[in-house]
Image (cartoon, rainbow, N blue to C red):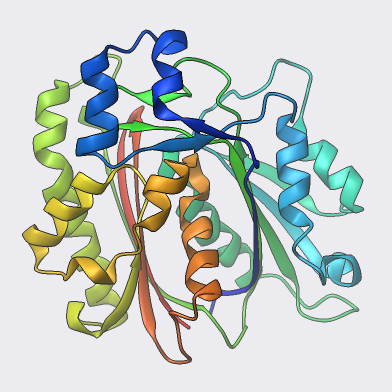
Length: 312
């Protein structure tokens, strides 16, 4: 059973108030007020002095055991929102592997599910580990990375919906760990919501919460967990209003959704799940045996709604 053995997150120290994004992004005063007052998005993290490779490497620094375990790392999976994040031939994933002494690992990028790619990366890494024999040093491990730069206008905000932070995460997965075991994964891909020529944005917004509620329900059913048994929900940090409305739709108390990072970091691409996991651990919100749900939605080349249930 796939398990999360360790998680590390890096967020730049530099805080950028949402108001300061108005001029470079061409936002109106009304749009800025919408982000701050309606969606609860007050600031993001940006550091133009850090490259994407810098972000990813700094995220791995918190994996204190990685140096001694690196020979057991068989796979490095980089889940990201955008298909292209650097100019050719720059390859941050290979740069990180070389810096960490992971040249022996099979390294690849997983995308096309936008901000839900992180959950897909966990699923794929777990499937690979399940069929991998033990290494001479012990059971095999996978390193899952997420992280992106807000390098274009499209990578800085979603009109009327969210603003993006730079940041990165790194987590070690095993096939048989005793903590944070993955109980179920549900994913629903909706190709009709392709932004290049699919359904209208208004129809996507109408379908958004029912589709996310449906995939959450499927993940709970597959894990044998009821909504009332969830200790915590780790959301994608798109905005506060989306989660307030979703909670009303499914009957989930809002205080069981960890939303503090929405206002403090904004939407950190695929890293939201790990940013929220770190906060939950720092605040001792999860006890052994607690079940929690991670949810994510990706939109771009169609839409992906995804949810995972874990047992801490």
